[in-house]
Length: 88
Image (cartoon, rainbow, N blue to C red; front, side):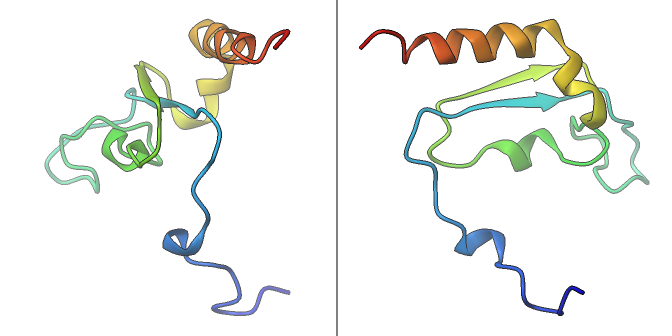
């Protein structure tokens, strides 16, 4: 059972100490009356919410939050980032 207040606040979480790549979806709905207004979003997060330090790169792609991981660009980006840690 979750206890109210038991989970850490986002601001209390440690920042990553490794290269970080963020994929931000932009296929969410946009309208003045919606929570994100006209900001690019994936239906769960706005693109602006994905920009935190020390993120090395934010790649925007036309996807909804649930389906971002199925994008070829995501797979290619992960492979490229993983390649940085090759035979060193």
